[in-house]
Image (cartoon, rainbow, N blue to C red; front, side, top):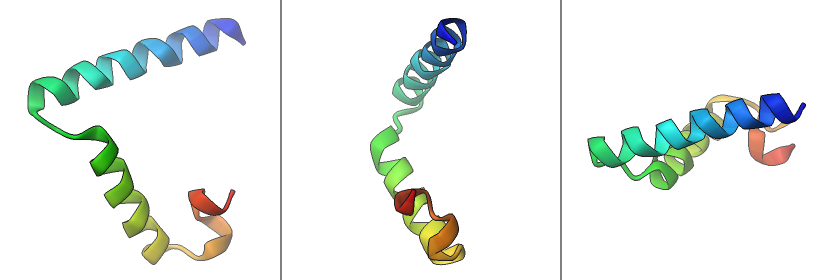
Amino acid sequence: SSEIASEVADIFIYLLFLCDIAGLDLEKAVREKMAKNEERFSAEVSFEKR
């Protein structure tokens, strides 16, 4: 479990580096994608409703 958490943290760090290099706002991208998913899927499967 702690090994998985460590690997997930590594992935997140690399994602942050990638977004920085690409000039992307990760928080904005996630919010926009969640809004699209909310429109696309019903409330039962929406990530915000969990």
